[in-house]
Amino acid sequence: MWNAKKNFMEVNRINVLLLLCLVNLVFWAVGSFYDIYTYAIAGVVFEFLWLPFLVLLFALPIYTGYLLIKQRFKSLLLITIFLLTLVPWVFNILKE
Image (cartoon, rainbow, N blue to C red; front, side):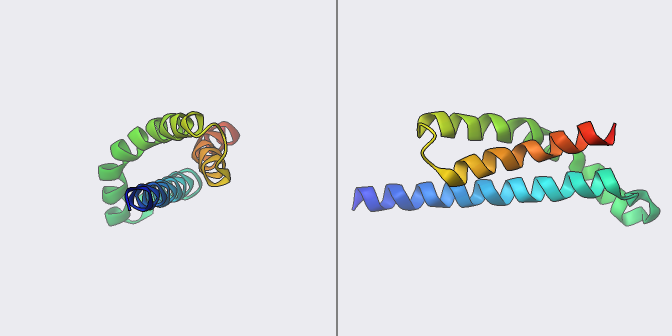
């Protein structure tokens, strides 16, 4: 019983991590490639959300790297999430 609950919590944590990575990716892609300030409400929403997403930009690769080391690089999904967290960094490099 305890092992099944532990596995469920691990899968749930990975799903939440994947969702956060995808939302972070979309946020930075939209901010990098589109002029969001053409619409005032979109600019306001972007200005309110940039700081939490900036924290996610730095925290997600560190956390997924920690989980990868903890699981000894056995989870293909975690490797995918780790690479996905690095995509906004690549957007920034390509933009310059």
